[in-house]
Image (tube, rainbow, N blue to C red; front, side, top):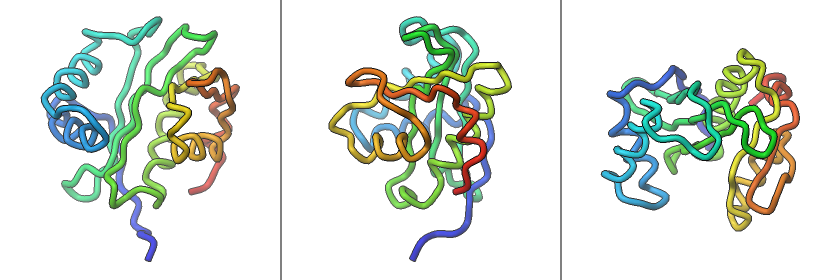
Length: 159
């Protein structure tokens, strides 16, 4: 049966980092590595190539439980204005609208900053992610990159 309760989304803070690292490490990598990487990203201590400092992480919560997160920043990479850095959802909550809800929050953040052309690095072998992005209006930019020519279209989509 499909889960119908939609979590509450809010901006992440440093206290969320251990939970974010735990979720991120489920798909690979060491939890300690992700704690440092996510903390440094959130604090603007490290940056992806051509990233600008404005960045955000949104978390999806059900009660006190963190169910997923999405991160993005402004950029100049590939003539884009923004980049989706990470999106991760707990395995038991995948394919039930949490990722779509998080994507809408990030899209709104980009639109508020007049950043419409948004790119995301996604492994060509990650069929589920590529289908998710395509379903939400992204197209192919390069073999490892997809792009929304206008991310504001995501805001008009329903879950």
